[in-house]
Length: 351
Image (cartoon, rainbow, N blue to C red; front, side, top):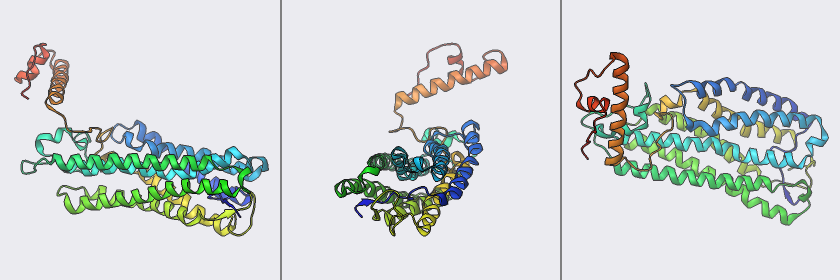
């Protein structure tokens, strides 16, 4: 045996039932996807990876069900590449969304009262994050390093995903007798999953650090991110535990080829089910409210400077003036900034 066995094995007739079950389970998440996209109070771009995976999995398991009934599709080289790539990077896409949620979890508690307006939680109605009071100091240095941590983690997740894509694309049913091709493939698979596993541990460490060190941490958000990181960690550990198996051919059912009933059961229970649990949790709960993300999360690379603040104040004044004009039919306000904006008089904002 000289070539890596595909994770999940070949789609045999026995895979029909679980493939249909998971296609249906992911289809049941579609109403949640639609709701999260269109509901103003729960809509956030931070779940984009999870949404893509949830839709793609319906296609994948529908094709896998088809493979169980048609030999030509079962032995399709293009479907082999597609499924190994999807299985290899799907859980990474879900875990990557956790990084963006963790960024909000770490950044929101660092804002003092004077800077709270810049916090993503300030743009989230009924968020579970506590707004600062006069006694809470602003901590820009802590905020800076939280952002750099999430930037590096996001880039590293991207590296893991690229390795996973290359590892999946290198699978070829014609190479199963080629030991050299098998050796070229293995490092990409191991690198992708190992990096993802380490990063998920870092997510868990980051959330625990917030619980221990940040006074205004959000316990609900911490429990949620830790809970979601568990099933994605299970997927990574499972993959690392089976990727050493090799197979003499794509359709071999010899021991160790991941085509046995026990290997199939382990695949669905320890790889596919945890992915679905993580996806259903992310879509089933209002992550915008729990993590105080607003619609785009913490998008700032650095805090706003004086010019940014001035532009924001002018924009707010114009919006307030328009609202006042609609409600009262004119400029009836004692706020000089609001009145000046409504009358198109230049406003000077102290730097």
